[in-house]
Length: 354
Image (tube, rainbow, N blue to C red; front, side, top):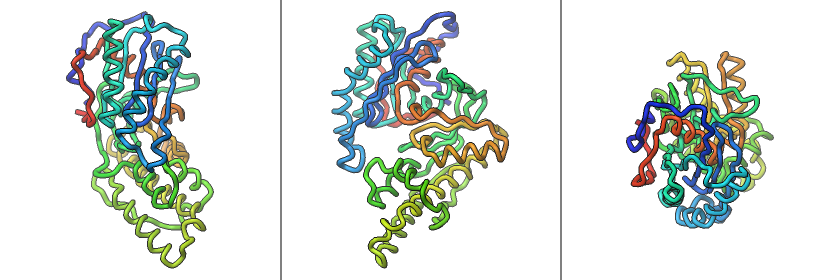
């Protein structure tokens, strides 16, 4: 369940009111601020930190320092593009967790200070919950899923299948036992000598290759849980073995290797998703998180819709990766329930769904 012990739920709902939510996201290496008018996004600004490319991955200390530099101009731009004054804001929503503690502390501290200075409510948001509820952002030609539905959250740090009964009633049915799918993509890319972030590059080259050229083993994991550590190891040993006989193997077969890796990962995800649909009887399926931007996964979900008669929901690309708009839509729905946080709330690097 997603009920948060730090929030106070008041039963009388806010109705017929224009609600302006300033949302702040700082869980990893993207500093983002957005303004929502009710459930519609009127600005969504994201500042991506490029410095981590030099190190082949996110360096937590550098990330938190960059957030400190970026957060004021990003929030300023979000308000400017929304064409509103901060005095018009109804509440401040922020990512409490999960994520990198240093990064979370920057967003949490800023949100608390601004809410206190403006004397408006503070709303804490679970980052993974926000990935799921991004589907409820008001957009033209956007069909929102009906409850209950299944959500597969796929990112650099998480891989989960969640039963979503309501906005704040969610149950994890399965999750990764070790590495997340996003890490599997990025580590595979690193093995191939591709720069960080490598996941999008694997997707790019995969579209040019033969997905069945190099078969990789799929892990045997009970239930609806996932495991990707063994797959990463098998990819590493495969590349080491082949480059011993042909030093140019990676360069000569890059497209086929990427296609084969992506094909295997997608099959792992889809096998578990099909099992979840069968076990629950719920045929409404949504995806969320950074890896949901992967073209192969999006295509596989649409094919499953045609083949199995599912109703599928795929977020816009701008709402796949970390962004404040998704934090804002959770903030909007919590505001309607007056589920506000107190000023003594703290960031949580591990934010367990209960």
